[in-house]
Image 1 (cartoon, one colour):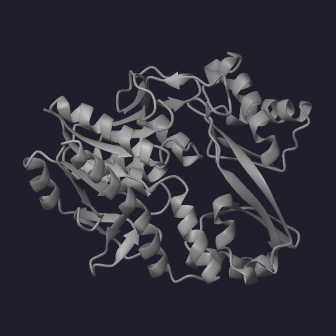
Image 2 (cartoon, rainbow, N blue to C red):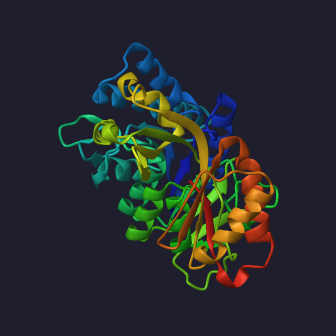
Length: 393
């Protein structure tokens, strides 16, 4: 009998019909004799809806209250899934992060898991019941509810898999594995049957959405096998493994995260960075030129930037940063920029560091740019010996 930790993302539990479909998958696995712990995200769009309500009421919501609010999204999902499983004769019990024994640091909005007391979950499994755990959350040592930041449900699942000595952590999403590009954007994207942790870490670090970086890093550190599957279609999957003999494509992946390219007068840089750090917003200092400084901030954080900071901004545009990662980054720099230029795609900024070439393009140009670079560096074997990794962050 295997012990599995399953994680279902927001699109997988995005409606009552989807939650019923997830229940069927859980029951099918349980019928095979597996012990199951199921981690769920909030229903798709729910966290954004909750945050938007908070910001409509306050330009600077209290971080503690934001965590209290956001944690409810996952709790809705866990309760509904436990309800439908019980109604169908499958014993199940829901647990908040705190009830599941997840103890975190005291950083609201971006806490780290420090310890997991598995007693409650072990007792539940011993009774033959499925444990449904709210992802993305825990409690600090004082009992305060905390959230784990973007991709926190993946992080929850990996940490639980390690603490419970699970045989595998299975991440169910809306794609049936790890692809060389987002197949919804790039039709020629190819799926990997397996991929090494080192390659997956590089992809996640530079923006591949299928797995959150912290979860991959934690799985690597804690020796937890990861498998990515679809909750919509059965059959295919990608195993993230330590096996160095695992065959991988010459290029590991291409993904995308929308960002904001922000230009501010350099005299406001310290103030701007300090405020973003206090708000727990991720940013990257891109370059400093003359009296201006250019930063990149995640697009989803735009609504969290206070009005007084927005008034400091000289220029702001939505962009995608395409990152080509590998030993050959310097070699392919010219080819990548030239290929985009020939198609009329302007590169706003580029940087080369640690074998990583990053190219920033307008968000409207992203689908064409992603497809073009995928065709050139994945489908075409011109650069196969150089074996770069591609990602978009």
